[in-house]
Length: 301
Image (cartoon, rainbow, N blue to C red; front, side, top):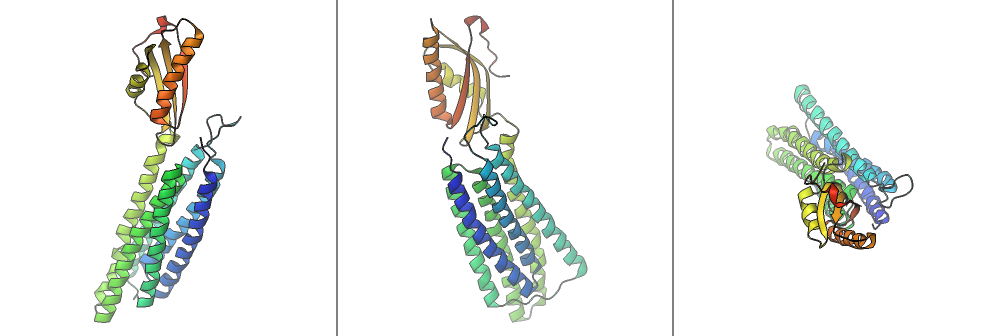
């Protein structure tokens, strides 16, 4: 399997620099305006930078190539890194909710927003959009769960920034028209922001758990149909699979073939492997050839 870690690290380093810029802009504008939602969003951006650093560490250990100590490769390190991103999203969600509830009980502090500060947030929004689509495009091309997970996180940033920008725009307009009740927008919008952050974390978690718990990757009936379509295959049973389709799958099976010698049996199993690899690549396949008396109708374990 091709090792794309160098490209993944290059993308993570670029996005780390952009995320630090975003974090600085949000923190500055949040401090100047006193906006709770923007301060929470800046906290969310701290996790972006932490995610990039976590991704760099995980990618360093996640070689798809096996070695003596890791005969099945190291790709679960990337899945662990993605789970770390989910944890950071959960922490960010908790912090946003905690600050919003505290502000409701402690009372609202007046927020003053200028057009220049709104302009800074438009720059932040543009950077987030670029990072999200860039990471997702490269992540899908090289098959990196770290980049795809981080792109999802950044997509949540886009919606968060849009919500915060809308709230601060309302506060700004309220100040121009003398409508103090618009100050509530800043706190009210903190709650949907938290929900968006939580949903992004759940999506990342849901996509990476099957890899870590060795959930079935391919239905045994599907593997059976492919294997038995090869001339010379009499029976296929004890089928198992794990991994994630499109990333890496491992397939095992017991096969009974109609062959007079070992060489012929080997050629039949190679045809089965070729078909399975073509359909479910990248895949590593282990086939155990058995004598006819071991025939079984039990497809899987």
